[in-house]
Image (cartoon, rainbow, N blue to C red; front, top):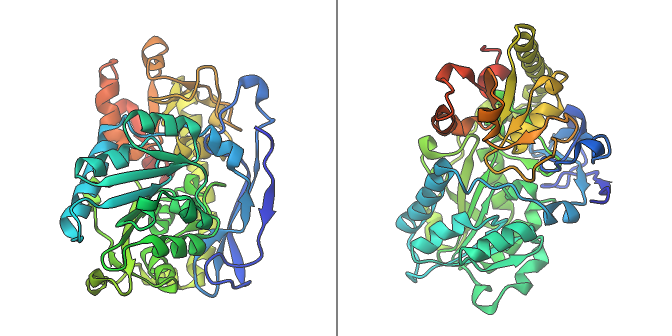
Length: 414
């Protein structure tokens, strides 16, 4: 991949204000999926991640955009093999159909950033007609093999004009952990509104919850790929700017969601469903700039807890591996001083054999490595799947007390 260019902004992505204050600085961070050969370590893309709060609309965001076309072409991350993720996707699809009436039993669902097509499989199983839009050629092929028609490309506001005629108007526009990747969320929201059925159309979005990020010190979710970080309050504000009403924040019950999941459902203001409007429940602290001034120091402390955990483990002669090579694993390791002390990073579906994580250089391996090259302890980055991971890895002889959740270690509980 050629080194991508970085473009810097000077105004808020939501309201256009130029009054922004930085509250977090993470130096020299890589892409989340840019695994490389050991020989190439040091030549991968790295750049500072700075996160700002707009003092006018109180939305959190980055002010840099990275050219990601080549990067997403080879993007392969997927949770399709997880029973936890599959259950979540099924519940989301079934609840959508059950809770929100439509004029036709055969709804049309467009998913942007559709990945390997698993969420659309769940919608298709409810009788919906589906179409995916996905930049990764690898994941497009996987989705097509499952019978999910998929357009390859980066979705922009102009992409609605390239949709097949039967999808020029749709009942649902769905995004799962894609909306916060958009460089211009307002332009996308306007485009989505333009193709939604005006009587019952739904914009359904799953994003990372800024409230939980800050509460848990999940700095790993501040990524080059992410442009905005929303709360229920800022979601309602953004939707309101583009003529949409938020009608649900609980489409999937909290107990059935993934690790850091804020789901909102919005509908055009003139829709018959707009009468279901709900109010955001964001804590009042997020309305005050002082709240953000503490974030940087708290995250620095959390990173120090991680380093201390690894140092203590290895000083006591114990070997340690990480589990989960998604963004949580890669970005957590990239900010740590002690990351190279991990023996390897396990993933259920490693990208390719022989690769290492960017910046940290931790080797990427498959699940089999835990049996052939065992470790004393496993730091689980994908903590939302920790029960599932414990069950699967127990078959290799590992005990429950050998697993440590990232959340516990960030908080100094070890």
